Length: 536
Image (tube, rainbow, N blue to C red; front, side):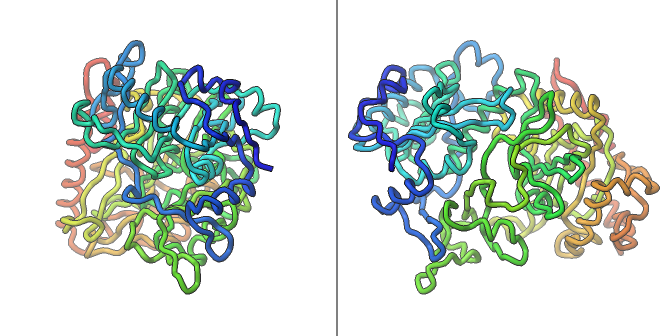
């Protein structure tokens, strides 16, 4: 039976703290079958042929980073990395946005409250409350965050932070407030509340909490990371950092290893822990033979967003990008057969940075010192290729600090220094793996085969790569193996794979120059300078 909490918002502290009055009914921490009844009754989307619920989020099919704001006030203002990522608003503007959301929610005849956890390690986890107006958004946060396991937990829940998602409202005073649009995702760290308005995209809930963890945890000496993680049968843990298209999700989903999580993790004194209780995977071009774990996770309790549904079959066409290339599916982690139930692992034995190098000059695998690892962590390099976006006619370097700069709330060097400390303390080996091109840049060379990439990953995980002979790269300074089982000859040294050696030399210098130019932003008084550990 649905949990109906009429006249109990007062008991949750919501009316006192946030001023939301009692709607007709409040539903709190519904089960999946209960949520499905609400989704169907209120016609918020529809069920596809196998019982998975599908929704359309309207004009917003991705996050709206230009509409993300943070209240500039003491004491947090002295810590936050202000700029394009963390845009400041005054407390007065936040109050207006907050009141706008509350006024809208007070008109609702139903609300949904989800109380859950972020962080699998109970010693360091945070409690987050979501107040939403739609059953499917309640569904989304239930998928993505760690769920209470008893009624006692729910009854005694006191949140560390509350997110009020009034997605159906907009800000009529946005020009007066000096904002970018009528949409807003606004945080007030001192009041421990965020408000969302004008966008239905589910990912705003997920990434908003990730940003909060990126603020809280480093201040406690805990590393927060945008990476996937898995562990072997002997307990050896591995981290996979990488931007979209580099293979982070695919390579960490290893049937021979246990998946800790696919996106967001922390590293504390006990080891690695997943922030989340679910996965949020892209579905574009999804095929069962290529990514069976994700494909088979699309079943009842999963939630599809912005995926084209074929009317005649009532099943998704994952190749159809007419709505968006950012079609998504969220599902609880237990939909993956080899998931790690604890959501935790020991201190990582290996840390892998994935780069899709469309310039074709990075080796398929390279060994990094801890200082070099920090340099590449801050660089967060990959490359876009021609055809992926309008106007791109040749490879274009992309740099994102920490492999997720848009989610960092502190200066990137804070995370870099913490990573360096963790790597050195626990003897974690670091590697750079190129999943991009070989034998020439995009349009000339060939994409690195998944077989060769997996051979590199296997060598790292089973330790056999440590027996190889390594040579130093004259430009980037890292070391690469001369030979490795499963990797074709002439590939491990990228210059050997190029027919035009002069073109290789020119291209490697071009990419090195891009690295150097990008890295200047991380050199400032009082910050650790890792420039010497990049290309020369």
